[in-house]
Length: 522
Ligand code: BGC
Image (tube, rainbow, N blue to C red; front, side, top):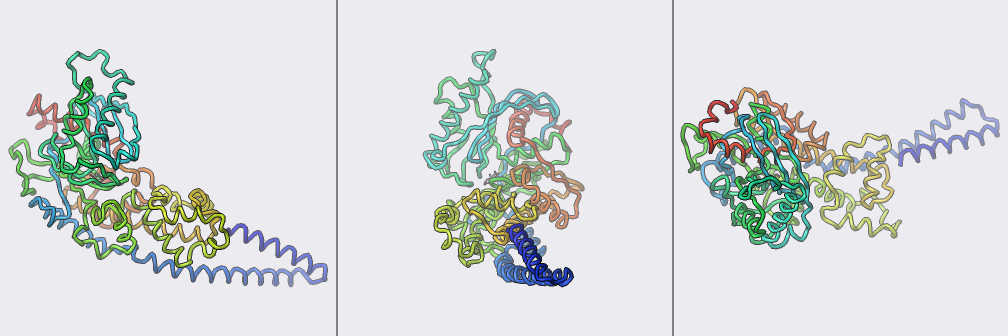
């Protein structure tokens, strides 16, 4: 490490000085000799680093996107969005652009008690939400881990497990106490996967994403599957009243505070967006169209962009390698360049490439056979480097890159050199910056399509929440790509609170259908 080598140089200088002093040579001459030796040492270090950095630069160059490339991504995304609003044709269109049957934001008059099941990552959350009028919501929730075997096993078992956890939640919190014998909780199901909806409570899963791969769910109505699992438990008093994508929840939760909030974005394990679209712009819309129903939230499922090749001009060999070895080759191409589930893996694949070229950890495998197994785990095991590592290394501002060294050591790369750490930090910065720029390009398209004088975009997800550098790069790039006034607002607990709001708006409109006209956020 740098600090060690400079200590070594200082000690070396002091020893030389002592020896020469004994020989009677003057201090000025000593200083000149010392500095000379030091500069020779530095030059050899620096030139070594320049050679390394040039090679590294060549490898990273394809990840560095120009504004022109970003504008081409924007144009392609916009075209795909427009095409997919015309007709449902999954062979022609990259995007699904699913109408969600959510037509209205909250008015502030919603109220009541709801349960929410939020399933979208490797764990799921059950929430008990009280809505008490404008901006006032109380939420109590519990996270349940999903055993890995369930993510890849029989679908019915996954739904049975969810029902079992719901039962535990109700019992542990004594929610049924003081309820009438025939009381049934309204449950909103936040299900963050691509679903074709026929109504608020009918939703067919089109494909799994984000590493899920349960059998016998694709092609089925997931609302029905959850309801059937609930009913199998006999005394679980719950009716599923709404299916909500996490982006829609995020938008709804934020729009109760920001009247100009018309889009919701998730930048987390997966990535996606939704926005309010006028029905006149949706030729494929077959549902109600009247004075009270003029718009609908569209779930874009834009993570699928690129399936038909429109992103090939920026995809790298590493992107292709990652895609081919994923559970879902050729799907979610855009998502695989941006979302947290894949960022760490992109970095890992670049590191493996650099190791194979002997740029990183040169000679270490041979010199330290005892640590080979650890290195191998990292080098062979897909998914062994996380987005969190990318964020922490990118933020490493220590002089000796000790944070990076600690992280690398923790994943089995013992005692990395300063140069190793430096190069890996460059890789993390580059991959994260590309992701932030691409996310910005996509959000810019949304803002332009909404065509409002100013717009608030609700955002949630780990990348936006916890990856500060990503967030800054996103905002900076967005500022360059769009001229319209906009702000990105974190939607806290959006996917659960917002889903409860979807159920609440639906309940309110059923009991007083005209109520929304007076209260609709403009
Ligand atoms: C899913 C979307 C979801 C997004 C964020 C994607 O993989 O297809 O439905 O909104 O992840 O969770």
